[in-house]
Length: 167
Image (cartoon, rainbow, N blue to C red):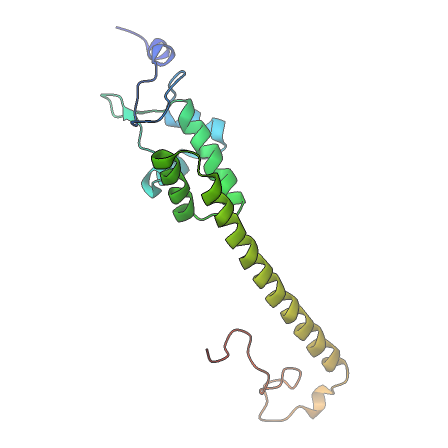
């Protein structure tokens, strides 16, 4: 009978996902989590979300991960940091698995995200200007002369609410 240490050290990778390179020493979820800077719960979440394939399991039920799982998790974290959603990351992975390098698809996603960011930045800049205008307006108002019907005359009721205009 082998000890746990020997079993862990002697485990070798076997193909867990068809078409995916498998190599190196297998690790359990806790070690993978530590290497990836994640929690075991996050790794299980990524499996459930479809961005990390479910690994082979030992007869005891323990998950065995190879180096490709760490590479995938690092990609997922980097893609999320770049603004991609899990759904978009699943698409990128699917393109990779079915067609090869997904660089064109990723570039298109990044272009879309950059355009969305430009739009949001413009909206936030306009909102900042409106907030500054209202703050400047407040300097010239006397709180004792606030209309009884108004909640606060610094923000007039006729001011269009941001994002609430009829579409």
